[in-house]
Image 1 (tube, rainbow, N blue to C red):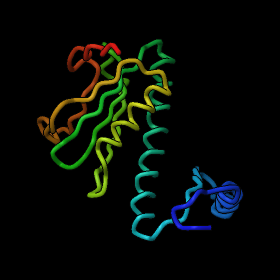
Image 2 (cartoon, helix red, strand yellow; image 1 turned 135 degrees about the horizontal axis):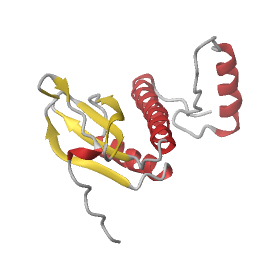
Image 3 (cartoon, rainbow, N blue to C red; image 1 turned 180 degrees about the vertical axis):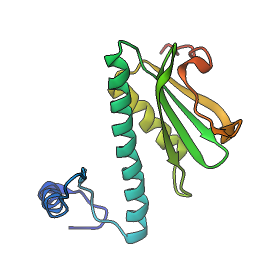
Image 4 (spheres, one colour; image 1 turned 60 degrees about the vertical axis):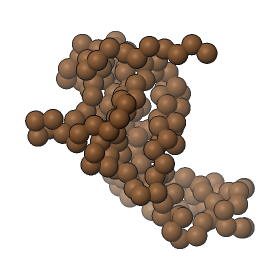
Length: 161
């Protein structure tokens, strides 16, 4: 086993073992096999993976909720001046059934990579209306954390390829 190498055949059995050892009533664990890394690199990668999994759980739950209501989800990402990315999943004309997710940026985070992963996740979830707000937005509006929803502006035009 080399640092930074492939997980290989050992990864899944080790993660299953760790998952069983850490099994706790009322707690859901998502063991994710990753290759060993130097400590500081592992801390950065672990934080990124933690937020990425949390975003996936949030998005899939919110998308399912809106689709159960017969509504088409709209996903929006915006950057804010307090060092956070705000992500919402909402539906046009529905002011109450939206959800927001906060990705607190760390110094080592690559915002372009987070945006790419966000777009890929939305594509996997078959969300057709994905918007990324240009520029850095204020943290809040009238003392309330600022999250954009589907009704905040018209959809961005599709780019034909």
